[in-house]
Amino acid sequence: MQPTLVLPATLTLAQAREVLDGLALPPSSQGPWVIDAGALAEFDTGALSVLLELQRRASAQGAALQVHQAPPKLRQLASLYGVDGLLGLQPSA
Image (cartoon, rainbow, N blue to C red; front, side, top):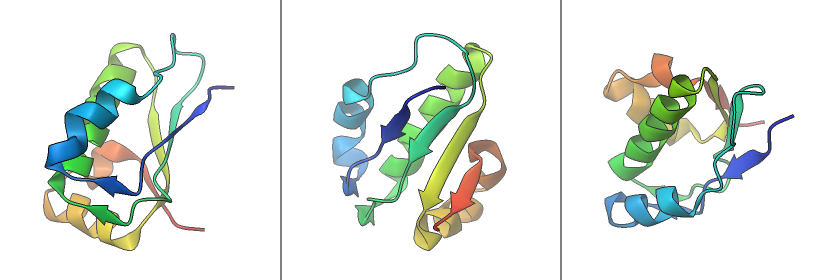
């Protein structure tokens, strides 16, 4: 089973590169890449940028992306930009 990648509480465009570089990405496609977005409290399109890049990298390795505990505002933002279908967003528990 793949480890869960946890997003920080704050993820804006200013932090996007640093957050992406700091995530320990799975080495191979042994299942879906699971992202825990439950801690996200302050975010903007930078969060979508990180998730889209993770989706691109997962896809390149033949893996799916699953975003768990996505805050409602993140799902709304993804829907507004038309990328909700790409990100496998799961509602908060």
